[in-house]
Image (cartoon, rainbow, N blue to C red; front, side):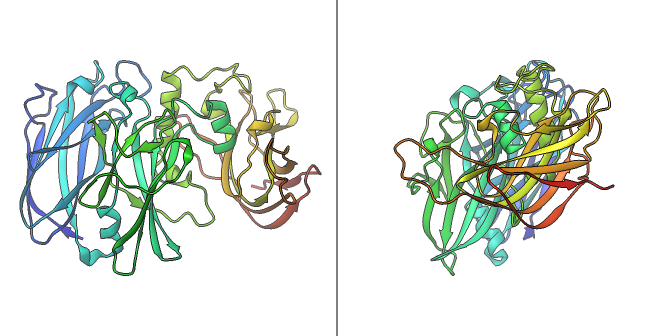
Length: 437
């Protein structure tokens, strides 16, 4: 990766007229590659959890053309936002950053761009170059523009071997999902209120040539991608309330967070949030602003108690034709030890997928720290008009994390982990593990 020689100019620190750029950067590129920008910006009064102060939108132009928007969603501090700019050729390039007041909260206050840096990833960087060259541009869903909801805030990629080469798999974290899974079920079965979606996959041969493309479309179908590209970057439009994408759409507002690589071997997708704890904060604040939190939230109501009351558990199983739940034991406010079940008495709150998963269960206000965790395997009813399933089985292989959120909604350190191989009897006694500190 080369560092481009550049001049960064801070034009204005206050949120002035949209025609006046906040900053611009001129940089020279010696070898063709993929450009990445890092914008360090702050928003004086921004608070994602407060209506009217949610965030400020920056409009980024690159070489005289619209590139993307950046939503300053992380609050009033100074934060770095990594952006995919796209392919560049040798020569001089110019990057401008403007405030877009039409998409900014009315009481966001002063917006400051304290710095803009750029890097160019060249073909000599091999996998990193391919990863940045094929990263998607995500166009906003029409009903989210100007609403500070379901914003794509982070992107990562994985490289996995496939039969005819390697696949680069891109996933996007949205701040929430306005439809699809209800908030309380999200917490029970996914341990989060963000929406994490596989967005795009590109299979390349040993020479780095793309030989197949796919995307996750409406209905969670994964067809071949035959849409448009900028360079090798696919253009994708969010088209459903649970943030599936399509190959075309009506909006022009788009986002392009530069992806980072993650290895999810023996881990859930939610570890990406743990590595970027501000996403946990953002998610909780959006729940508060959208009035999806209540101290008296009942299971099945679609709302949840304060996220700081939840215990989060990440575990891994080999699961076939079954469901699994977990429980944590803690003292209730009266001092009595009790078990708190993740499904909360609702079968739809059980985990039915194999591999590593995360879930969360709320404790009463004033409950103690968990001292044990247990997992239970359940039978699943047969589906109508579906051939009989094979035998049911659940084998627990790992518990990676047990944690809670602190007062600022940031994950605390895990208090427990376990590895092994334990078969859970379907409908039988749970496996109980003590948490020793």
